[in-house]
Each structure stands twice: as C-alpha cells, then as structure tokens.
Length: 185
Image 1 (cartoon, rainbow, N blue to C red):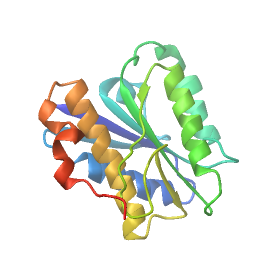
Image 2: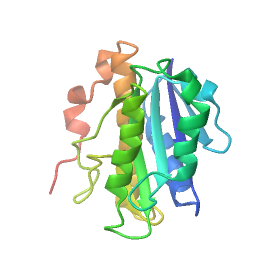
Image 3: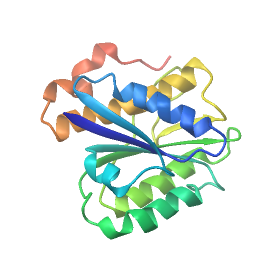
Image 4: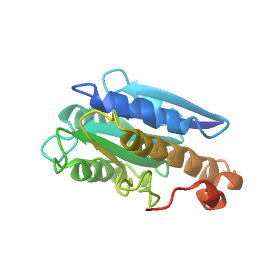
C-alpha cells in the first residue's frame, strides 16, 4: 500500500483548501492511503509512516511559516536521518500573484532536502497557464478550475512517484500515461 502524508499549515484556510485538493490528487492512484494533517495535529509518527510527503505553507515573506519551520526543528529534529530517501513536494498560497509562493516552496524544499527527502517539481501543465515546477502555487484560495487542477496534479504526481520508486509499480510511471497528460496551449 502506497502511503502519502499531506502536511500543511493554514492561517486563513487557503492552504487547507489546497491540501484537500492535493489529497484528492493522491487518491487518483490506486492502492494509495492518504493522511491529511495540519501542522498543529501532526506527529513525527505521521512523517515516519509515509512513503511520500506533500508540505504546504502560507507564504510568509517568501518563506515557509514559522509554525511549519518549528515542526521540522522541534518535532522532526530528533528523527534526523530516519526519513532519508522519502519522496516529497511543496505547495503554498499568498495574498496575490508575485507574493513569493515559489520562494516559499523553495524554502520548504530546502528544509526537506536537509532531512534527506528526494524533492521534485512537475513539468506537466495543469492548465494552459499553470504548472507546478516548484510546487503548486495559488493566489489566495484555490477557487478556479486551474488552481484546483494544479493542486490535484501535484498530489497525483507524488502518489505516482511513490508507487513507482517505493513499491516498484512501474505501470504508475507518468511517462506511461502520456495520453492523459495536458499539453501547453
């Protein structure tokens, strides 16, 4: 069974909405269990349990939130080296476009890489104008079909990569599904 954790911090509910959509994308891949946890309720056991991890945070001055950073410093610090080699990705929301969401995803990725996670981006387009190269990013709440699609695509890709690289399910490799992928318009 493929196991994916969607871990998020949300101050306004926007990142929580993104997290739910990422979890929906994860569930597109058969034989995948997903846990959706806010940073306030998550434990180290949740992170140790998963094969793949999606981390979401509001953008705070181009960085991840202090609560998410504290989780990694204090909750996960004692578990250094125990998550090495797990697969991970990032997502973030800010108050508007140009608000630093991709920088926040990079700061999340930096924390994850320091713990040994294998971090990825997605080259596919979720819509004509949105691709999660650095992670899924949206301005405010993910209301539009395009914003929702980018979140679902990130979750789906995380579940695909864990299915392939952790469980040897080569049929889930995204390259085998070219007909299903959107093309840039």
